[in-house]
Structures are given as structure tokens and as C-alpha cells.
Image (cartoon, rainbow, N blue to C red):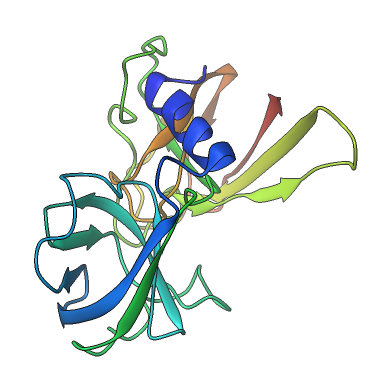
Length: 210
């Protein structure tokens, strides 16, 4: 199901929102924030957008005040699945992209409650630090001219995971950090999958019709 937040995100991604973007110079930065000069924004104007700082790192904006962007982390473009990139300089030049961040991450849960249009997060998302069942970048595939695309996630349970667990539902998000970001789709799996031991593996493919 495409939830309401997903409807909004798709519109912003395709049409570029009502603003062409923003450029400026930071007055402060941290591992999860960037502060602009003055108070140039309305609250949450940039939620779901990409902010690019110092020309070498980017973040997905989770929320913003009139002057502070909160992101999930700083990404290194070449290795977005790796550790967070170095925090940009506190005086870094930055740009907020007018469109929206792509929805390329997949999360899973044992919760089997039906998906609802007003849901904004994946109930009981698995977030075990170091586990093999946490949110991940999914593999994207699309055939030129086709009306569908797929996202595929492969999860391998490890010793940090709480097992056994019965996976029942998934969601797609624009951030890799668990329990953050905008959810586009929430889907109850066609059948549940039980993972009982370290090394057990699950592959989920979501087919989206445009």
C-alpha cells in the first residue's frame, strides 16, 4: 500500500515541490544537523529532501526548524551503505535539492497488522544494532519502458538478532537509519517467513506498478 506520506513524497519527487531548492552557507554542523544563516525556512519545508554539503557529502532531511536541518546521517556518495561520512565544516556551502530523496531502503517487522493509509512508520521495525535484519538499501531493477520497478532486499540473520522471528511485513523509506525518514509503501508479505537460526536468509521483492 502506498501510504499518505508516500503519496505526498511521490508528488514532491516528480514535480519538484513548490520551491526550486535553496543554497547557502552553514553557521554550524553536527553529525545530524546543519544550521543556516538567519531563519530562512518554514517548519518542515525541506523534510524528505536531500541536502548536499561541501560538495562531497549529503544527508536526507528528516525535519527542519526555521534555521536548522535535522538529517539521519551524512552519506558518502560512493559508499552510502557504509559508515557515516565525515561531518562537513561548520561553514560549509550547501544546497538543498528541489526534488525529494529517493526511496531506496527496505525495513522489515514481525508485526502483522494490516497496512493503513495514515501509517507513517513501520510498527515494531527490527532495529537491533549489528543484526542482519535491520533496514538496508534494496536492489533496484526496472526495464526500459515498463510500467513497473522492483526493490529487492536480502536479509541474513546473525548472532545479534533475536531469534526465532516471523517476518510479516515490510516498508520502504528514504533513509537507511532505522525508525527515521518518510515511508512510501507498507506491505504485508504474501506469506510469512520464519528465521530460526543465525545464517537463515530471507529475500523480499516488492513490485511497484506506476
